[in-house]
View (tube, one colour):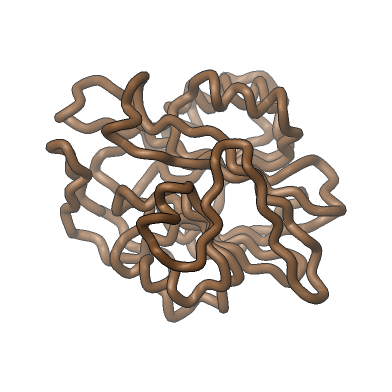
Length: 263
């Protein structure tokens, strides 16, 4: 049995600590108040700052970067974190753009993190589609990550990345045994793209959890930006009507506080 400490920094950014490892997802540390372009006429304003600053981070062994195209997943301050991290794992196209020592994975590709006195971590890149069908040219390549190591009791730890619910994400339930799911939610939407959603809704999350059956479900990336349409209240309401095994899996992380989770 492995206990993992997860600290929700804000947005998609989480610090994951276990077995001597310190992993950071999608580093976004800029102060709130700025409006950022997202391309193709889209933009959003950051409304909430990080719960902890870069100076308060421990040394980071690896960054799991779902994509670098959008500032809510990688901002100016966050790029400085990449430079100091031991390893960056991301998409193949992002690896080419960063031009540094990066592991770029295609969907279902794997890499292994190894370190003296620490359990090896097998990282599997999982499919994402950051918008409606045929939106790849607009949003670019995105990935999720599933982490597997010896001693997990309930199954792998999965970070969904920014994605809608579609066939590629449903495939995860068939291929992997997910014990803990960090789900990027928020039902992101931009006026320039009309009613199209660019991330999962609360209803999508419940539907997905009925397939995955995770022991623990952790919502992230549902707050802090103007393009999110569903916050904590909407997510909690949807899960309150879910089947018992889905409803009881929901776990909220207090921003900036390390929460211990059994994986």
